[in-house]
Length: 476
Image (cartoon, rainbow, N blue to C red; front, side, top):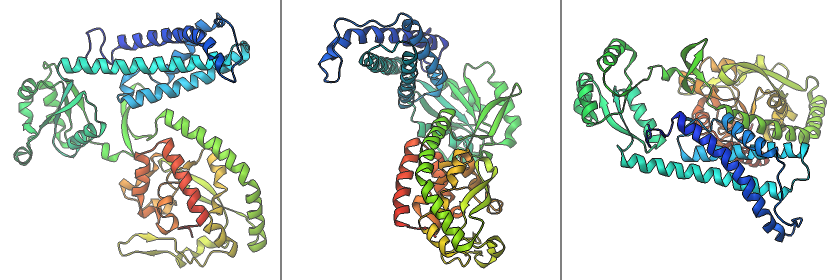
């Protein structure tokens, strides 16, 4: 692990405790410094002039540090292993601090309303600055100490097959400077002869670990080598090296696998969600706020659409259909009806297979469409009732489209990875083709979204979707 003095290792409990104490102290420092700074802000045109240093309520000196540290704990900021990258730690620190600011503003509003607003804003900004600066300096310090010691952790991988090479790829992708790959061990003569980074056989583990000063041995052997893995662990029982085991089951995972405590037993969760709890919270709030606004704005349009359908082809106005959503769970989706009432029984009129044997179930000139339905589809107005699915939590504004269950039955295992996130009203696939690219044949677009999710990507997709809907491109 990252090294510092013996009592201050990067991921140690001591460092976590120091972080809590330092953060609480910086909150108090922010309160004191903001009081000194406030008189100088009288020059601002919107500032209410005050004389002298304003006083904070005495109880705030106890409450503010507790709230700040408490929110940071909820965001796992004191768990260094969850924020290995500087951008992740500093970004989460800033986001959590903004939430703290909102919480403290609410506390002051309900108790001490006379507190200067400029004093409060300067306190939040100063304290956030203190938090970011000391964390940045701590990272620089640990990097210097690591370079002066042994250069960080050296990782040796037992197994140069697909699982072992995936470890190498992930290490390169993560770009963590404190981890370096020492090489591989493998008993396959072909790998020994073909790859320069294979340092020897598994029997050479003790020798290679000593010569290359390996700190971590990752065992990435296939399932059939279980007995050899057990023997290797026993052979290294007296060697001071960290041992890690990768179960050869990750190819079965929906998106990624993680160890979870299940009834007191550590188990490998193959259906671990692709989104962290924090990402899921942000995405849900985003859906509720924007979804509610969209529904409010779209209500008159939806009423007009319903009337047009009723006049053109009668009841029912809504079309309900079972779709597969997150983790493959089936739910009922809502759309405005665009086809004749017995469209499902007439599915044979449009279904066909392409030259690769893939099922095509959507065509541009679908004979089942009504006159109103053709117009609604061109501008995607038939999708508006799905705002109700979004507000109920069955869908999200952005994500892979929910698929028809009978098409899911024909999925290959890798295609099911698109179910790792909530289904969406629009998504990466839609802005790169919409109806003229059948979604079950272009799962790669959905997997790109799953692997690169961020709230900013959601905003980008929504903006591009609006542009495409206006021009009716790709929809039928």
